[in-house]
Length: 398
Image 1 (tube, one colour):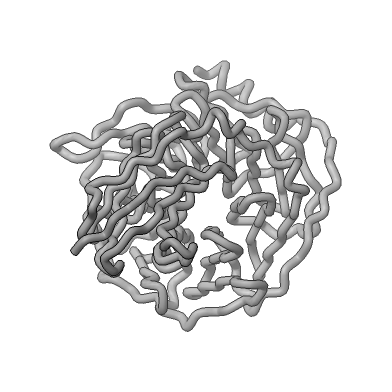
Image 2 (cartoon, one colour):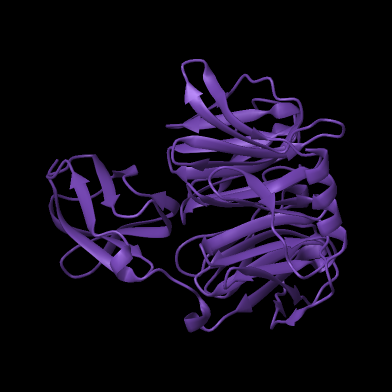
């Protein structure tokens, strides 16, 4: 173990200085506060959370700064749809977006919260200092008891498991995989490392990534995490995001940007030296946000985005009960995981009545769609997966 740790930090400090020029552009936004996280939804909608309760959104090219719900610094944001989202921050702050306004909910903890993630509209997780884990299930947040010694900076779902990343000085802890049991969350496996993990992305059971400090970029092969070797030196990393298994980005201190393509990481020349705290990918657009109101973007030609062959994607969309009254269950068959699925319900004229975007939808996952607002009649439900459209008929009968 000691030999591995020595090698890991040697790799971190002895990379070369190769760099690729990229067309990163600066966005003008209505704040100079530090921006800490970014989330994307369907269409061109973009959401950003930052210090002093800052919430920004961009729709149809126009930036909006929402009236502040809190004065606390917001550390993470996750939008499950255009009309539903969550942000968390210091002193246990949790705020919710209902499609019109952001509202604070009663805190469950006074510890700082660093990350919020939802696998669907009914199931989410928020994590923070002193091993704090909050679980959201069907409208209610609850605190989970655990014996974690350390601060948690990242928490995500993959299928029914929870992956946690964090660290604490002199504590041998970096990544934990946990599953739900009758007693709460039970550990499945640990990866011990004297480092801090700030961001995790699990793409499939045998492919995952994690980023952190000092200069840590790890790959998971289904059995263990190992330092990813690159040809370049990079600073500590704050955020990591993938749109599919061959398109990723990680950002960090000093304007650091690493992009993943063709099975390798390449350092890109950004147009800022400010720390970048959050990143996201929407179709062929990369986003990074950071200190002093920094928002930068890069647009790639769509042909440069690696997508899975449509024949390898899901081949069927199931809906039940059908006819449906108030709650529709939607299930897609196919591969283990789809980076993004957009579900739409339309009438015979193509008018959209419901639309929801889900990130990291895995095979055989089932989600619930509220249909009580729809009038009786015949509809079409479709799933857009990387450009492949799956359709089925739907009858609403109240």
